[in-house]
Length: 92
Image (cartoon, rainbow, N blue to C red; front, side, top):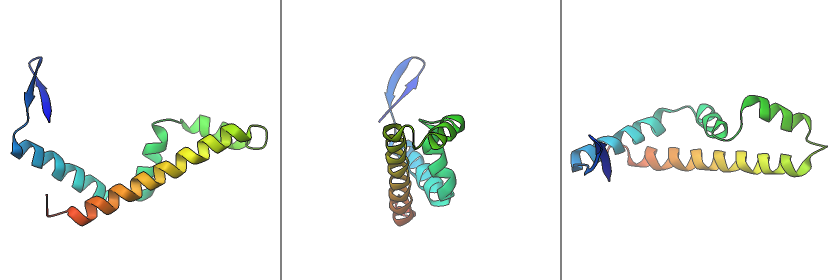
């Protein structure tokens, strides 16, 4: 793993890598599930876009199905991360 220092890529030390992993573990262990899912959904859809898709569910079923599928993927991703890091906290 590398970091950018003064315009050059430098390898991270094992201590830096462990610190990053611990930050990830702390985040996923402590983050609220609903907040994390919402944040993941916001990577692709704004609230306004969501409301529009939900309002037009019957008129645009393909667009709704794409949205729904993406939301389910976000939920699965968050569950996976929370489970992974909840198991490994203290082992990092």
